[in-house]
Length: 138
Image (cartoon, rainbow, N blue to C red):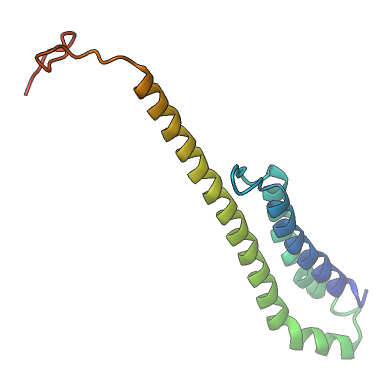
C-alpha cells in the first residue's frame, strides 16, 4: 500500500509523455499534416483521471502508509501536482499545434481546390459586365 500513490503517479506521468509521442508520431508529414489521432485524445482523458488517482489513493490509504512515507508524500505533493499539471499542459499544447497545422493545411488545400475550379470555369458574364441570370438590386 505504501507505493501505490507513487506507482499511480509514475503511470500518469508516463501516460502524459506517451500522448505527446503518440500525437507527434501520427501527426503526418510536414507537407501533409494529419489531425490529432483519436487515440491521443482518448489517452488525454485517461491521463486526466490518472493524474488524480495518486492523490485519491493517498487519501484512501494514508492510514496504511508508514509515517516516513506519509511525510515524504506530503512534502512532494505540491511539486508532483505541479509536474502533472505541466505535463498535461504540454499534452494540450502538442495536440493544439498538430490540430492547428492540420487545419491550416486543410484550408490551404480547399483554397487551392477553389482556385483550380474558378480558373477552369468559363466566364458567364456578358460583354456589358452584367450577369444575365441575375437581377441587380440595391
